[in-house]
Image 1: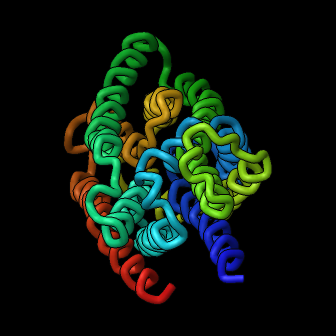
Image 2: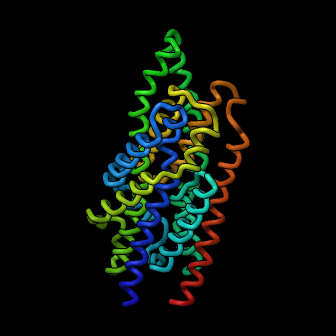
Image 3: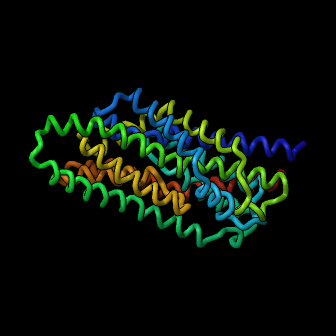
Length: 333
């Protein structure tokens, strides 16, 4: 009975993680198009919800990384997984309430790794994979920032003789494409996290944790996870949307297009390589980059500093939460 209860709790928590992920990360796909007034908030969030679902239901590379390449097989248990989930959900909910775009993926990885250490010691964690994920904290926003600047410079040169009103009309329409592409890549990367967690739950239940890296993922896990993140996106984390779309810098449609296109490209490549990156980091970095092409003062660096601080705090906060929860659960169960 306890076994089935823990299985149910873990799957429910995985769905909750998808909801919080979509709620906070909704800003990543729609903030630029809303901030540039290219797409109405309702249409942008609806488009993002549909494409998030499509992306989350498509691939499994990131899901397998989450399931099998963070903890050693003997450290994967209901205790460690549930602890990591609760840590990420709590921090994600608090950050959304504060209007801070954070990486729910990094929150879960941090909580899961710390829970593994609490239960099975330092050797429980696959530190080489943690290093790769950790390096993306720097690499992803830098690539987004540089890509945003490069694309903006190219667009300014290509359309240097075009009338501003014409540019606005053209790129307002093109932002439908980049908003959809960014939502799809978000689902393809972040949306696979609940899928990986459900795969972990089923492997723990059946006793086949050693086969996680090659085990097939049931279709219903993809659908349930995709629905969860899509629902979270449809609800919309409006405080986060205002932060990314309106407070980092003032966006025109051409800048919204450039930030979304550069961020989505980085996320797509990472997803194909099976690297869980932060959509938040990519999008915020790209938004800062396109804003800086006007002038450095066009970016509100105070807001940007708070966002980066939230990114950094995600690791110790979720790590401490994961460790504490795992220690408590390990003593009780």
